[in-house]
Length: 128
Image (cartoon, rainbow, N blue to C red; front, side):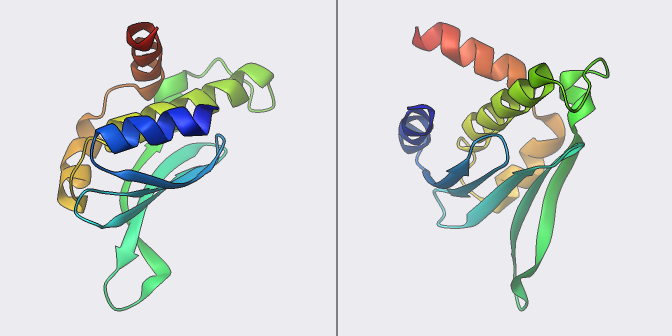
């Protein structure tokens, strides 16, 4: 259900959600045809792209952010609230980055990316 909703949002923004593992990873195909992999670890969130000659063997990191920057320091990493917040953050990042048309736009947008948890909450309110 959530994955289908995310697919529809991505398609409305001109990109495709190729794969989604709830709260852990996602693969987007941007409007330019370039592939981006989103990854949520235990403490960081990263965005990767294929590197020219090496391919996916050693991917290029487009951006990295500490999850605590978005979620705050008050969460225990084994807490259900933390895991739920990571899932929501992943969904928010998918929605935000689906608006980017190319890898260059992702690199430019990443440092100024708003809090994806808040973005997801706003999206849910607006969608009803």
